[in-house]
Structure formats: structure tokens, C-alpha cells
Image (cartoon, rainbow over all chains, first blue to last red; front, side, top):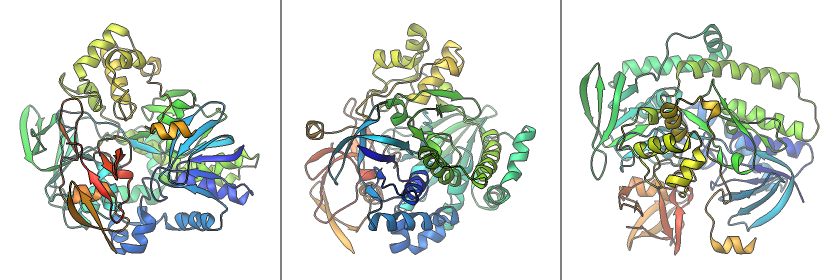
Length: 444
Length: 81
């Protein structure tokens, strides 16, 4: 039996692994990327080695992860950590049995302790034309830059709001190709905040100051910002050629061949759901949060979207808890400070939830091609249960296993049946969590 | 260090350790696949292993996620068109 399984090698997973090493435990770290870092520090090790210029472009929010990556890789080279890159956790049960397949061999075992540090993904932003070539997530564009690529176009439009689009807009200016336009959907920013929201903005002054700087620099650039946009659609038949939208009832069209869309980020729910961990709807983040009392621990953005610094803290805290250690007050205080700042971000940039506003023919499930109309009609027929809609329409049964439609379906159920979010049954994920070959199944 | 990758019979130079999805996007090799249901063109969308839009055949193994695959010298890639 394995002592400690850590799933994910982002800031939470790396910090959990290093904490385990301090406690004399040799963890198994499984990650689907070829190198450690998660999304925030993706390819940071190879960037530092081969692409020093990209560290300057992407800024300290990226390069700041280097010490963590280096300490982790040092642990791996000393054999204090069993690190499995390019590997998939495809099976996980409540009894903590699991299966992993990857180039380092297949593993089927049971772990005494498990930490899921599976991170976050972009909240799907379904709109007409969003499956066309030339449309990507804002986070996806950042990952392209981090992997050493350039964006494949100079004619870029960003649709969305919040810290990530603002950061990307500033990074694109750094590489000399600022976006032509930023289109802010109606309802994507709130200027009037509650008192805790305002106070939160000052809890982590350095981070919030950076946010204000991005806003200011955006105003100075040649980027056109369209606020309060409605009925946004990507134009094109075989590939994206532009964006159409309305402002105050007036139609606008902007030509572009790279459209980057964003509606905030949400925890990666699939392994959590597959492990039978209960999740409940968190009103502040408008997302599913895993039950913290579960015997399988969840750390980092997989538990709640709090950012990279918090992920490092919670990876450490969950590991200390797991092995019966005391949590130092300084860790708890720092986590509290980070949470405060997140209150500000959550309030200032609420998700638009594009699905609810989507026209009937908009594709909601990219794998099975279910449309908004089909999901709406089915929700009315079968009630507020995403699993019954899945059975009826297959949405959530494709290779992505509901990652790209789960939240959209909840939004459609909510709007169509007037069911409060906490009362909607979300899609349940089953094994295999990720697609595996028959060969891997047979070798288990 | 550069490596040579063959995509649908054509040879491409790539940086060692470059992501296959990055190479495909960078060289405007699109679409990367056609959707199995309606044949609609698709390209990498999420770059983080979530959406499965970048599935290609790598060295004879079907349905590999290009956004999680590092290029290797002599790699043979086929698009599902």
C-alpha cells in the first residue's frame, strides 16, 4: 500500500510533495503534463533553461514559481519523490484505490492518504461560433506563450473580463502584439462592491496594485475596449473571422482571426466527483466546492479558486493535517489574507455564465454537439438533474467527460426550471476519469 | 536543438521539448481534426488537457492529446481528417 498519492504537479501538488518529504514520506506525484508547474507555472523549468526572454514577457507572476519547481525537481533527483509526468489518473474510488497509466508504467494500488491537487480550468463560455478554429480560451493563449509559442495571429480580440484577460492583454503588449479589442460582456465587472469586497482589495496590497496597473496600462494602449456587450457571437464558417455583438441595441462587428474567450476559472471537478467526494455549490464563487471533511484531501484551486500563493499554502496545510502535524499560525494567517483579496476579485468580476444567455442553436456540449435548445427542453422534461439530461442527450459522455459542458448545463437548468443552484444535481463523473486504452485496462 | 516531426507526410522542424499542439498552432496546421459526428473543423482550444479538441494519431496511437504531448525526433503525426 502506498503512503501518499498526490494528483497534480501545480503549486498545491508541488508544495504538498515537498511537505511530505520534510515529514519523511516519499510521495507518488502523478501529473498529466510532461513537466511540473500546473497551469500557472506551466513549462517554467524549460522556459528558464531555453527561453529566458519569455520569463520577462510573462512577468513575475510566472517566474516567481521557479524556486518551488527547482526544489521539487531536486527532490525528484534525490529520489525523495516518485514523480510520474505525462501520466493519467484514470481511476479513483472512495476506498482510495486508484489506477494510473503513463510512460513510467501502469500503477494500480491503494493509497493510505490522497491529496487531489488537480487545479482549475476555464469556465466554459459557450457562444455561437465558439467551436470554430481560431477560438481559444484566454488561459489557453497564455499556456501557448508559456510553452514557448507565439500566438498564431496578430489580429486578436479578447472576450471576457477579470484578472486573466487583463494580464494576457498586458503580456500581449509586451510581445508587441496587443489585442485589437477587448469586449467586456454585460455583467462581467461590478464597480459597486460590498464593504468586505473593498476591504479585500487592500488585504493583499501588492497583488491588487498590480491589477490596477494592468487596468491603467490597458487604457493607454491602442486596444479598443467595448463595455456592456450583449449577444456576443464568433463570426465565420470554416474558421473565425471576427466577433459580432450589440451595445445599447447597436450592432458592432470587429474583424479578427484569433478570438480568446474567458468567463473566469472553476475547480477541476472530475477526479473529485469520481472519488465520490460530495461537492456543494458555493455562492460567492458560483462553483462547486468539494466537501473539506472528506478523507481524500483536496488542495489548491481544485478546492476553491484562491490562486497560486494560496495553493502553495493549502498543499502544505492539507499535508500537515494528513500526517497529524500542527498548522503554524503564520500559515493560517497568510491564507486568510489571500482569501480576503479573493473576495474582492469574486465580487468585482462575477462570471457572466454565457450558457444562460446562449441562443437556442448554440452548441453547449462540444463532444456530443448538444445545443442550448436541446438542453433547455430536456431540463423542462426531466427536471433539475444533470445526470438525467446526460442520459437523454449524451452531453457529458464524450471524451471530455463533461468538463466543457457541466457548468453550462447547470446554468441552463437554473434559468429554464427556476431551480436554485444548490438544488441542482451536477453531473457525476465515472471511471475512467480520463480515456485509457484497452491495453492499459487489461494490464491493471 | 531541433527535432524533425512528420505531420501527414510533411516534415517540420520543431524545438526540442516543444508541445505538439504549439507546433500545430504555430504552423497554422488546421484543422487538427474533424469532429466525428458532423465533420466540423476543430483546433486546440484549452491547451490544458480538458477539452480533447486536439486529438491526433501519434506514432500509430490514436486519440492522443497534442496539448499534453512533447515532440520527439522522428515522431509521426496523422490528423483525423
